Amino acid sequence: MSAALSAPLGAPLSEWIAAALVLLGGAFCLVAAIGVVRMPDVYTRMHASTKAGTLGVGLLAVALAVGSPVGTVTVKAIAVVVFLIATAPIGAHLIGRAAYRSGVPFWPGTVIEPAVHETFPRDPTPGNRGAVEDLPPSARPDDRVGG
Image (cartoon, rainbow, N blue to C red):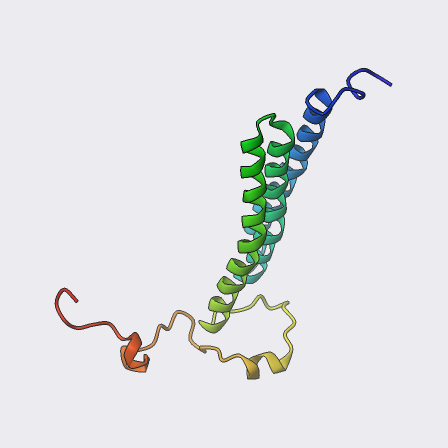
């Protein structure tokens, strides 16, 4: 066994692990970018960017934690990973829900269960924001000057 592989954590072994994590994270980020460019509609683009992007950036943050000898960097990297895991799925869900409800069309190859359209209302005209009169009174803009 070589001396580099039997060294303690602060030595080259952690650098090799960090380098491998950087390569994996970069590969997942590349897959996310290609997915955003190549996918046919907003729903599949959102799926590609959320899944692969979260894993890619998460691996990059873990690589930073493994490769850094400073404890505060490790804590910050772990906080980034936790924040990503907590917020990325919620953001993707809200974007998809808004796109669906505003009538953004699906790719023709998308298979949808018929009950979905009955359960969740959808605007038949994409981009239609509706009239102010359709809003509940508490959500209408205030007509007063400065108000």
